[in-house]
Image (cartoon, rainbow, N blue to C red; front, side, top):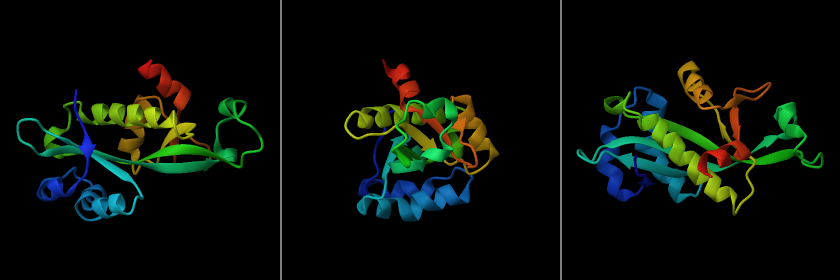
Length: 168
């Protein structure tokens, strides 16, 4: 089990040492994440390794929507036709430091993000969690946990009803 906390100024020095091997994700944490949190564009959650205090991984969440026409047909019958877009939660980034790869941190971060998204959906409408995998490795990771590729899009989603079954 891991614990996560909101990214704050206390993590400033720790961000420098973070390296997941994907420059885009490393740079985001080091230079952009704090600004996004301050501007309320996303929430960034970090997990610290108990023994070393290093950031072992992070993820971001924000409000989002997807066009109704890219929702798979099997889910459309649950939705009113009057909606042109469907409210979702965006799991924008998820990264694990190279030193902690293969330890289950990625899976635990995903579970934490899904649990948090499900809890939020009780107060603010969200039909699904959406991800936009940056490469084939990320797509394979999300597929392994039940995410579905959205038609005519590189995005993937996991319906909140499916997530609900994980936590009840």
